Amino acid sequence: MEKTNTITNENMLHMLKDLVNIDSGSYDKAGVDQVSTYLKESYEELGFEVTEYKNKDRGNNLVLRHQDSDKPSILVLAHMDTVFQKGTVEDRPFTIKGNYAYGPGVIDMKASHVMLYFAICELIRTGNDSYKNIEIVFNSDEEIGTGLSRSIIEQQAKDKKCALVLEPARVDGSIVSARRGTGAYTLDIYGKAAHSGIEPEKGRSAIEALAYKIPKLHALSDPEKKLNINVGLIEGGSSINTVASQATAYIDVRISTVDQGEWIDEKIKEICSTVEVEGTETSLSGGINRMPMVFTDEIKKLVHLIQDEARKLEMDVSHVATGGGSDASFTAAMGIPTVDGLGPVGGKQHSNDEYLEIESLTERTWLFLHTLSRLSTDRIV
Image 1 (tube, one colour):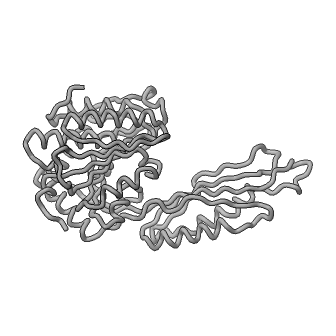
Image 2 (cartoon, rainbow, N blue to C red):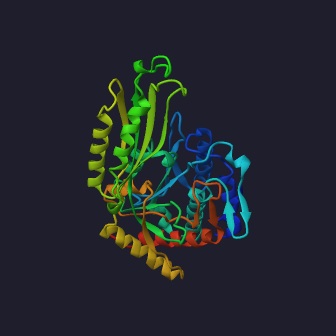
Image 3 (cartoon, rainbow, N blue to C red):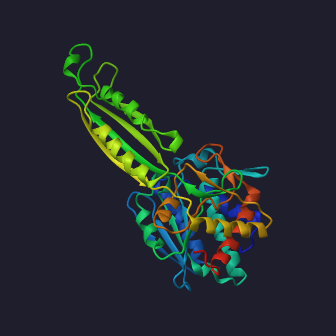
């Protein structure tokens, strides 16, 4: 497409359509790489230098900074992957209905990529050098825990004064100032198969062993302290008339403090190492993969700066804490003031009804542009 520096819905929706109509689920390497190539070429046209970190089975990660940059102090994070399987675009491609745009990943977070690109284009067009003060990480595996790209994010964050994360805004336009931490565990239990009618006494049921553990794991939750454990998926057995020789549980954890993470990790390991059914064995993998993003005084200052810029644009922007995890947790855990949810407004992420409020596309682009400009001249810490 022909690149333009003009922040208008028409121009931005053109680029958004291009991106949404590329399948880029986390496990679809070819699709994610197609998105990364599109972005790489777009930014190179603007004078950005792009470092590509290649992966064998997942999409490649990108780090970008302008060729005239000298020690940029602002880190910008955005992910290129979605939760949708290959072929989703064919079933429901990018569409516009009234004031809303639809399609896989339209708000989480391809609209944010469009917002960032056009904000930078406008800074360049107007001679505002703030674009030289940012370093950008586009990663390929946020939706599956950021296992391959976490080290890249943390490396690029080391010398930054703040981090801006482009997850979508909340449905009311709020930005995100705090997030709960997350954990993911896989519990495998191994028993012994036997025919359930002929010689059941020779079997050792992995499903039975797993059944003992699920209530114990759920009992660790403390909703009042915003600590939650959920065994969200189980599988096992081979047939109805066979004692199950294998069973697996997938465990989701949400924490609100670092201490909770340490405590819950210990308790999960304790429960999963106990043998209730003689002759079975257990294997636990995983752990706490994102610490909480805690609302600190430094983050408060950054939020106030963004809200101040919003008021100048006659926008009213609140801030909230949310239970979902994101890459913001990594930079926040390093003590770097971090704000998330800076993308456009939309909702129903990860569903067939995911949408973008089109009007918010230009509004949030201007807010992000002004925020970058202000952060390049003001000290917040």
